[in-house]
Amino acid sequence: MQLWQCVTGSLDPGETPMQAAQRELAEETGLGAEGLLIDKNRCRSFTIDPRWIDRYAPGTTENIEHEMHYRLANTSDIRIEDSEHDMHRWAPIDEAIDTVWSWTNKEALQELKTQLQQNILKV
Image (cartoon, rainbow, N blue to C red; front, side, top):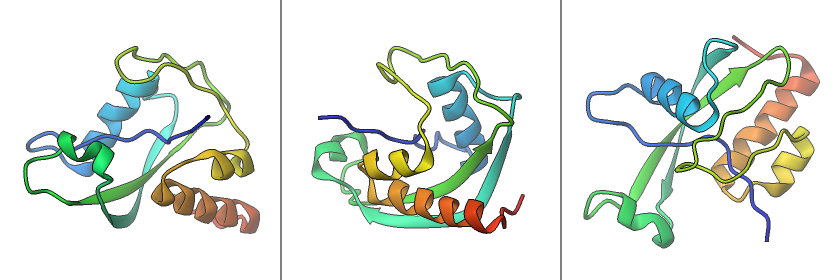
């Protein structure tokens, strides 16, 4: 079975969503100053999948996901942190939408595709 996931992570104590996104992007891909990280000011709330509940504080059952986009002019070399992932690949957006397992990631990618098609991306 093949699955695909966007860069994700949790807020450290005292960290803003933007700071967490910058940190997670660097940790999971090695990317940072090459592109532009954009806060889409969109959040999605979801029930935590039982497979991952042990990663959260006791009694936590809901998670809030903050959507960020990272814009690059061209594909770039990715440096994977072994403790984070075991592989990566650049994928066309339709393939990413079909392959991603998280409904929140799928929804975000579908909205991004619409914006790309309509050429209405907002920075």
